[in-house]
Image 1 (tube, helix red, strand yellow):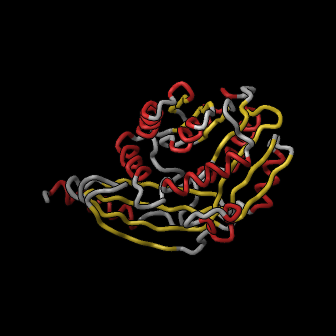
Image 2: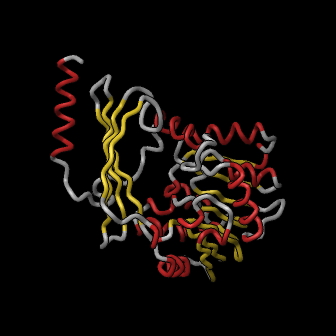
Length: 293
């Protein structure tokens, strides 16, 4: 290691030592760098890794969810579906294979590129449109488009501050036809980890880098905001550079979420703890919601 790297490491460690604590959600970091090309490529690898379900669920579980959503959202061939934060299109393309016309929106360039390639490989390109965009900016363009259903699954709704989240629900309602359906998935508030914690690990590949790195992390729960924040420092050993990333997530109790859906333009809504008994490895951690405009 050269002197320049020593200086970078020293500076990075002092930044960590002098960090503000406890971390405050959204003030000290809001979301992962989904739109960074290198990060999005590494995240795509996690989505496609069938050895775990931490980014996208393993295929057998995904298909069980698709079956459940098909029934609850009253989908049929020719229906129009808006998939918000669609990731690599694994759900969207499966619905397209069943005859649904799907529009997917995601911030990650690698995921959107893969979704388009997957649709082509499955022969459903004519039924799929994938848009690389921030859903907060893109969703208003879909108002009054008469979608039959919309998806907002795997907890992505929670990463938006409450005011932005409320605007997204209202936008989703406006994108649907009267009687159209929304499916939403959030962590069960009672099962969210609200205890402070710290961790570290080292690796030379994975989500946080593709060369040797050390990841230092900590987690806080803000009871007033009902939100958590995970803060990550990634020290890249070869260069001495450090990345500082914060991920904030709101927690929603079912009564609050159901009231928010009603205030956002949905006439009725339902909560299904543990994914309504669906056979998912982590079903107990989640609540699935459906709402009808």
